[in-house]
Length: 196
Image 1 (cartoon, rainbow, N blue to C red):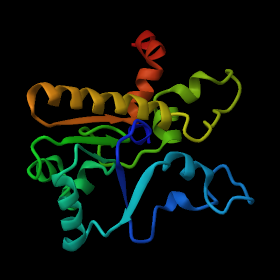
Image 2: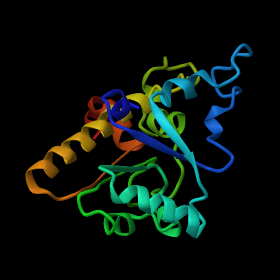
Image 3: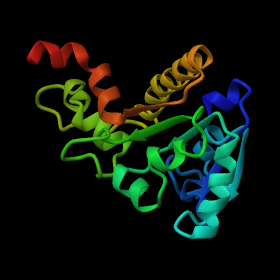
Image 4: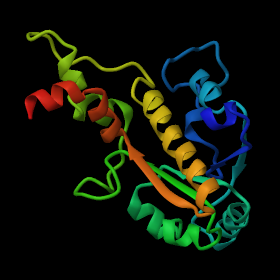
């Protein structure tokens, strides 16, 4: 979204059934909306293309788009990328100037790398932020939608733009990555460092 706000042409790949985030029942629930207002906000300025990435034909379409792209962004965990033939090695071979940007819940390696991650469970809870903002005798509070996703996106945008700048100097693409956990720990870094 931030890249498209800055003038980039963004093509969002969706499953054949469409992005589930389009569903009006996603939070905040608003019976007056025919579409999820959060989806409208996060998908503005983007083109959408529905393809089956598990099929050879669908993957061929994505590969063709990637050959002329500046940036490829994925939020699939590493094991899913490998299974779908969308890992860095697969995609970067098509376009050596490409910036391959991966965002996960828990990072690219480690025991939780292949687990899905969500704003409330990783950025908010696992980072310790959930515990930090409550009073001692109160139960943990749940974060509002996007509380970790949106600031994490700004850090991810910085990584992508820095890689694009580096490419202007070197002519070479790169793999940049970030995670909800890394951004949550950065947001809570004063408390984490104090504890350590």
